[in-house]
Image 1 (spheres, helix red, strand yellow):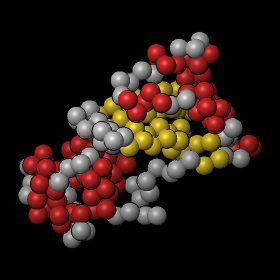
Image 2 (cartoon, rainbow, N blue to C red; image 1 turned 30 degrees about the vertical axis):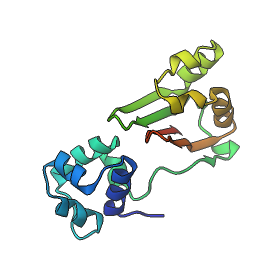
Image 3 (cartoon, rainbow, N blue to C red; image 1 turned 45 degrees about the vertical axis):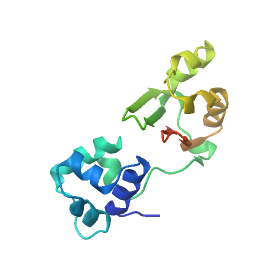
Length: 165
């Protein structure tokens, strides 16, 4: 489903537990301006987009693209890319303000799994990350699963997303 820029700003702000006033303060604008953006009455100035994306822990492209990243889907065998040419992406947004993005070639992930060092190799100090079964994820990817594999919204307010592209 397509979301407007205003709907995305509202959703990302709420996911971070921010009020319109909090976001406005970080951007140096009024809460009324944020309200107008979220209600699609007006749009933020183009120069404001990098700051918005940075606060939300995303790229400007992700903020502006018509579709959000697609949930997991299966690619038919004849259309699959070589797993070694794919990217494994982790995004963590913590309540404390940490914004962590990890982009790793799948070849490195596979090597880490073979060496049984994945838990140490992909060691993000976040409780939500501790419960992830990396072997199951690798198996899913090898079977053609792409897109958003995991989305965790912890009770602490942390958000963890894992994608394969």
